[in-house]
Structures are given as C-alpha cells and as structure tokens.
Length: 614
Image 1: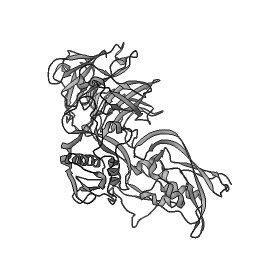
Image 2: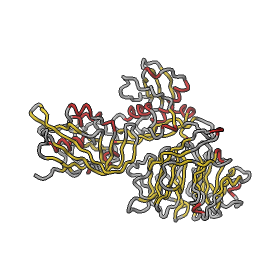
Image 3: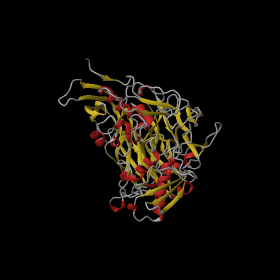
Image 4: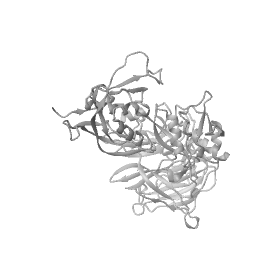
C-alpha cells in the first residue's frame, strides 16, 4: 500500500455541511429546514467573505484513521461552538487537555496531511504529519501576529472501545487550532478594542480623553459580542499594553453567571461584573462604559446604543448612552477634517473643502505657506488645522507657520543632506499637537520630535529597526508610528510603539520600540497613510506583481477584497482617519482623489504632497 495523503482537494469524508445564504438572506443563522445540502471541500468554497455557514459532522461509524484526521481538521473550519463536534474526534483524555483557545495558526492553503506510519507503531497507533506554509498566528489574547515560516506538526491516533467495537480517535495533537487562510477570513472578524492613551511626555489637546484602537480577531458567528466584551475587560494586547491603560482593573471580570450577552429590544446592553470589581466611582464607571460602547460600535453585528454596568447582585453601577460617550472619551481619528491639502505647481500650500464636489478648485491657504515667501517640497497640517509644518524645496529646512496669518517660524530643523531625497521627510503631527520628522541624511540619519511643534528637536531613540527610515506617519492617538524602512533597495512598512517617559529635569525621552511588519504580503511598499484607528492604506507590490493600492491593518493582517481601483504611477497617498473622506494621491495623472464608491477624479494636473491633517 502506498503512503496515504490527505490533500485539500480530497472529497469530504467525515464531512462538513455548508449552508449558503442568498444576497437577500444576508444573516443565515440556523440550519435550513429544507432545500439541497451539498458536501464540498473546504478549499473549493465560495468567496470567503460571503454569508456561508459550515456545520461540522461527527465521526462516521467505522471511520478509518485517515477519515478521523480529515474530519477533525474540517470540523475546525466549522461554526461549531466550543468545538464540540471537533472534540468527538479526540479521545476523552485528549479532549480534556486540548486547548483550542490557546492559538489559531493560519496557513496559506490549509494543512497538508501525510501518514507517517501505516503499520502499527509500538502502541498500535498511527501518526500523521500536518505541514504547510504558516502565515500568522492569533494568540490567546486574540491578537494577530504575522509569522511566516514552515509549519510542521503531528497528530497521533489510537484505537478505543466504541459502542459497536474499536474506533480510531486522536490522542495527541498540537495545541490550538490550525486553519487555511480562506477559512480564517470566513470564520473570524477584526474588531477594535479601545483603551485610554497614557499621557507621558508631550502636549495634550483639550477635549475628551483619547482612546487607542487595539485590533483583535474573534469568531464572527460564535457569540462575538460576549467574546469581545471579555477580551476588552481582560486588558490590552501585550504589544500595546505599555502605552495604554484600561479603566477595568486587572481583577475585573464578567459575573460567573453572565452567560451570553445580548442587547435588549431598545439596544441596551447590560454587563454584569463579578463582585471583585471593588469600589467604582462614577467617573471611572462612565469611562469603563465608554470603552465598551466604542468597542462594540466596531463590532458590526452588535447594534448596542447604551451600556449598563451592574454588580453581580444586580445593583446598577452606571448607564451610558452612545451620544454621551463622546463627551467622556473619543478616538482622535473620529475628528472630521475640514479641508484636503497639497503643494501646487508654485510650491504653495493649497486646500479644498473636505466635502467638495468634483468641480471644486483649490485655493492657497492663509498665512506664509500660501504665498511664495518659502517654496515648499512637502507639508503636514496640524489636526486642528491651525498650524502647518513645511519642508523647503531643497529638503534641508523645516518651517512652521499659522494657517490663519502671521509670520514664518524657523527653521525649526536643519539637515545637511546633499539632495532633497536624502533630506527631511514629509513631517507628521500627532493628536497631542507634537510634530515629527525624519532626517534621511546618510551621514546622520535621525528621527526627530518637537513638542507642540516648536523648540529644540528631541532625537527619538528607535530600537530593533533593520534598515533606515524613508517616511513616517504618526497615528492620531500618538502612540503608534508608521515607518517606511529601506534596506538593500527594498522598502517595507513597520509600525512602532511610541513611548514617552519623562526623564531627568522633566526632559522628554521619546522612543520608538518593537517595530513590527504591517504589510508582510507586499514585497515592496512605496507609500502609506493611516486610514482609520487601526487601518492604513498602502501602495506597493507583491512578489512578481504590479503596483497596487490596498488597505492593511496595523497588526499586519489584510482582509480579502481590500484592493483599491488601479491608478498609474502612484508616488504619494493620503487618507483621512475619518473613513468617510476620499483618498488623495499624487500619480502620473497629477493630484487625484477617490470618493467612496466612485472612481479616481483629477483635482490638478500638477502638484505634489497631498495630505489630510495629521
């Protein structure tokens, strides 16, 4: 007998049943009572983003060892609460020790399975190898972590006594769940949890307290609301934890009998907390509720408009509505820009209204940057649209100026670079009012920070960066920075964590740590911009491919269907963190913009450096 192999194209044996909902039945939630059921292989399913429910089937009587392995792997791809059906393929002992919540391993094409031993081993069992190309893992905190490598694990089966004789069951297996990428995209959805930014060094803007998005993945049809609430209460992911805080303390948990959380018919969600929540004053309670409301608004299926926190005994802690939450806390990315900006052919800063139609004409801004007093190469506009920072045409000087009049200030920074391309990068403002710029001079490469956009620049320590910085964009919350990093002629996108401890004599000590890859699927990234609280738009190409634009998450994940309409020769890209605003780009066609659901429109034949505030 030859080696037994289970490929992803092998017809289903132990079986999955797929129920597909039509376009008008977008929320298929239960087993259909009638109609045709068709067995299909996991790799041949319809579009992974369509409304497909997959129902696992238990082991067939007298199933061979190979069918048990296949059935178990296919049960992992199903909408099976607590993986109850998958556990039927395991021995009782293995079912107790197996931890599906430990991690989810994502493979490019799903696991290939080969029988290592077709004869009896010393214990009369069988061993199968699981192999594939690993793309990422989702850890016990639900955080997505890109991790490309060869995947190789084993499962072992033995024969057990069944009701009608001996049956094969899995007795040893890897921790966690293993899925193909298409099954992961169908089964899991991205959700942003929200935590408060730690103040640290630097300015603070007025208004509600800043919230920071912490992206996670949850199973989208297995009580995602309750799972999201639990994850929020458990605290931020390890990577983000040093720069955010939660109003839920480390001992807080859902009440033991909370069960599945569901909003009532008025869209109010009651969240019972365990007794160990302790003393909670009104301010802390409303901030906890605000974290919940913003988080659940990111969960498309929740519909929650009001949150009530209560003690385990049923007594109320506080109630907060959606409209009130914005006075307590706010993601800074929620600010709606008034204008779109770029540098025109006269090297002036010009702007257009954010809601402008296709016939809108750009006009110079007020103040020094709107007149040829200082010709500009690139600009950044503060998030309150009161000030701007501009880099001179030669790339060697950074100036700041008011957008409502006044004089040119600076230069705040000077570079000794010999060419504009080696000089100062396009600057970037964070939501705290601080200004960032990279000096790309090969003789003294540095990342600089200016508190409130003025004063002596602080040199930022950057650790763990393999290459040198070509471009930067700071997130609205000020705790993450996107970096285009060049090494060996190729440029990649990294996201670093911004830490702002106050040093001796109250001097800020700013650092960027643990930069992680954010577009691992792209071989080259040439332009990028933040496009939401945890999302970026990038321009680049995959290995062997052509230039494309697509959305990626700051954790390195990219959902299917995120590619944008094509555009020739894109050099720069700009997006608002208000996701309703059009994209802007500098391309071979000039300055163009892409309204939501529309096509690219030309704004000006000449110009460069399109930007939104930030």
